[in-house]
Length: 163
Image (tube, rainbow, N blue to C red; front, top):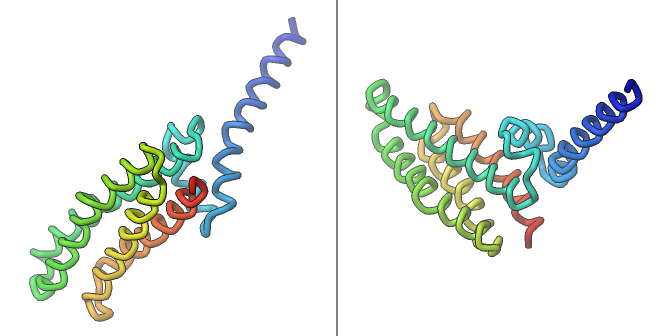
């Protein structure tokens, strides 16, 4: 009886190690291991996902950060009306991420055409950078922009594994 319990525990430990290993193995090939592991471990799908699934999880993270940034932009219109022009540009850029780049990346990865998925992920980082540049060094969105760039770089590295 004790032996069977020990075997079950050992099997559970083995399964847990192997579930975590795909995330760790994959994240080792990205520019930010800690960010990658943190993002993928925060999603319950991560432990059972293949590489395509991991890329889709990260694209969902891009989508979530985009929505968060758009909400921040909307709040800044009232707090910082002098930034309207830059905020308008950022709003357009982040809406492009949400309405074009994310859907393009999801569709491409889902259909097994990762090159187009990579294009959407790269563009998300570019759009965030252009938004940031519009503030001429006084951006209230720097933290969110840097997060988008980092997540886009990690996601791109994983999508490239599918090429």
